[in-house]
Length: 202
Image 1 (cartoon, one colour):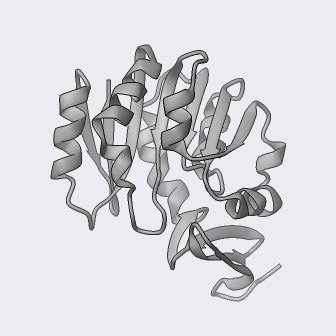
Image 2 (cartoon, rainbow, N blue to C red; image 1 turned 45 degrees about the horizontal axis):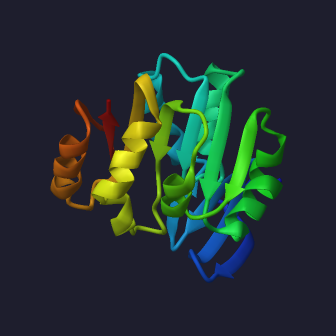
């Protein structure tokens, strides 16, 4: 265990999908960094806590951009019986999530190695009461995830009282995303945190 006042790198790899991936450890806790941006663990837990506190029901959950599973762990701590499908496009990140973040030990979590856009297009199963969209590759949010086809399909995947939560980095202009969300959902609310914006779509 690293007891130094700064984290140490314990794993580094280069992914064709995500670019440079680094895992750091300090005091027995791990953080996942993609293209020099932290994606899981550490401050990400604090960022997700605020929006997830608004969630009052979570029995069937869909997570796009599983990463190291920080949001999943927070959900399971509040809703231990929840059934979760986590979609992650990068199998290298899935491997890291299992090895360092214990994703293979999360009860009720099904991990899918795949492209969220294609998965949504082909999905025919049960609906969800909570959908999280956190599809960043480093600092880039895929254009297709703002497209009407994807958003309309998400809406169809929601139960009557369900909610889709979009995670958005503050250094990106949110106006275009907000307008597209308003066009496709009956109600859209915005939540501000120190570094991120969250859009709640009903």
